[in-house]
Image (tube, rainbow over all chains, first blue to last red; front, top):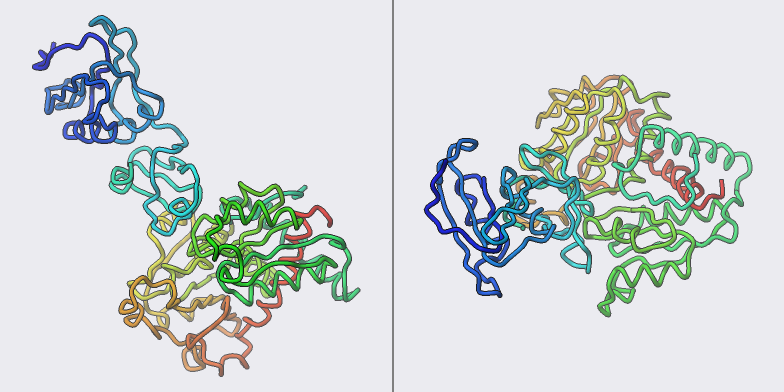
Length: 152
Length: 308
């Protein structure tokens, strides 16, 4: 059993099995550096993992993720699992999953796309999960992983 | 096949059956038009042409098609003469114009504008070109032209020449040709190659694709040479444009190496990529191609209005 070098949380969310090196990106896209409830955010980088070799773990105190936030994590860390913690116990655990359609959480990388000029909720179709590739519903431009991460 | 109320936004929304249905409807209307001179299918219907970017040819073709169907036309030919100049959103322009019309044709410089317009509008919307993305009605008239000239599309070797990077006509045409058993020769300067994702998609769909910058090396293979203009207005940097300006010129000397039956197409307007001397040869069909826009757009207008 892996011995974690970070403390347990009483209430909140543990995002486990994040590919090594993506933990900071998870914190960034979930804006966890600016938590309004004042809860602690703990990050473990390069933790040994049977599944992944090395992994990152993010623990967030006093916060439960919305569907939109879970979908964002899926784009950055498709192997991640989300654990809901109540009273120090895992009460729910699920794997993140990249949805077929990504709405509202991603900007289009095409600067000439109408979504940058009009009031509109962005929408992308996932055309490949590995490697990650999505197509803009409006301008039809495809975006690959690097562009996707830069536009979350 | 009921098309009433359908939007025509992207060739991606079409199946092969849809394409064939439009082409056969256009053929029927062209025949009827020849016999009767004027049709009345769209009598009492109004088309709004919203051209946020100038395009005389496409606009006139749609207007001609609507008039020949017996309908009438309202609209504007450039954004500076509309409320857009006052800062009105596309959404509001569309919601307003649909109160006055039964069908909307839109040309817009931003990619995805036609899709957004279609989502906002209750009446059918037809995309007449959105930025460098799609121009589906041009594609349909291109397919109609090829089919008229060869009585088939399957089995042909088709060359797409010029600006394959920014040219939306060649993007849509290549995607539509993937429904057929064709070989595609993508001929362009290195800088203006067809976007990688389109080439990959064509290959995934089983199209034999050859990429080259050497027209003369492949012209002898081709049944169709589809020439496009290198579009100065699409280049973010003038210096980049100057590097590739005038990369190709199709003239009689180049055509000496071509097959007898080679047909040269061009969505027009041309600048210097086809020499006027080619116009008189049997290879040139670009003005017939322009004519074909009318029956194809009549078919689309009639179908989405549900009057034919």
